[in-house]
Length: 49
Image 1: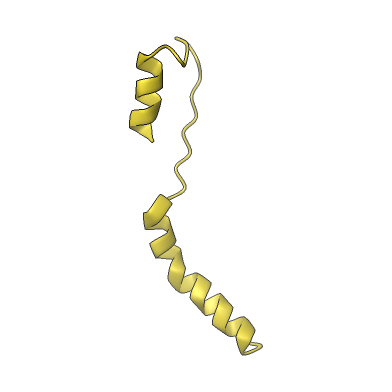
Image 2 (image 1 turned 60 degrees about the horizontal axis):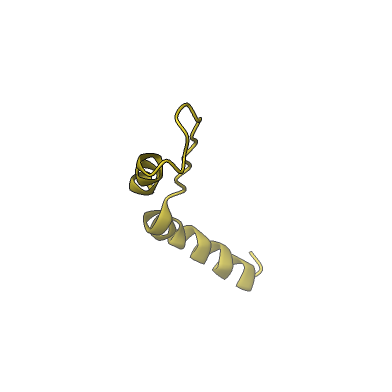
């Protein structure tokens, strides 16, 4: 993601002086970290807990 932003700046697609906000939500690592929580919520709803 950061490389893509850097590349856009280099190509002039993002103008000098622009404010850039890059929000990284975890991607694949975030999904792996949340999988256990997601599974426990799913099983709890199946068991009506």
